Image (cartoon, rainbow, N blue to C red; front, side, top):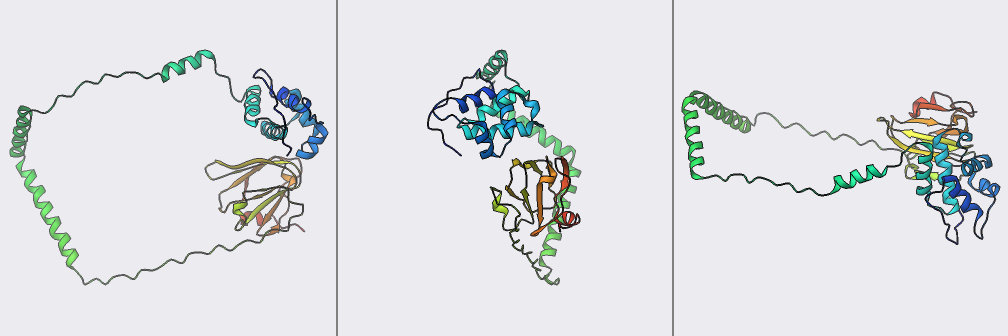
Length: 291
């Protein structure tokens, strides 16, 4: 990634496309879209669509946001500012009105709450409580006697059980800890471009590598996303251990899936989106191995 040697000036009134185009075409380091396209592995028409605000050319919002973030970083812009402006233009988030901000500021102002002082206990209130409790005990003395007898009986039973040594102690059985074998690194078909979640590389049974551009999203059993990114050719993702992960592929035919070091058959045709694919190793093996 190239570093910018000069400050790129943008204004809040600019669209996301104007920010990107200004950063690319101004200053001493002007660059062509074709050059950046080859560097980022993103099609020229997609980069042009981002600069012109013609977002219909790009199939899904996740691709638009992913391409724009990579483009902004390459041009030396703050990617968060570009993505925020882009989300506003796509209608993903709405700008707060001045009245809403004013209401929030008013709500955030501290309010003074006057607490009433609680009356302190005095001698008369304590004596009145004692007299009431005494009268209650006198009225229900039978219930208190039964409760006391039950409590004494419980203590006797506990003492007898504690003193009974006739029952031998049961031996403690230690449960063996299952050792997780280290999985061999697959013989990838393409040169590695970048690795993701490489902390799982030693024991990952399922490994993905992109042959072409494809959006990949991995979710756990609760539907929470653990990984979401557009993978470019050569990118590798190591799946965490577990049997409840599911995947969504924007281009399922562009992803190589390796299970226990072996390449399985494609999970679908090229340029096809698939969702809810189980990432259980045994289920993936059932698809069959590639020849």
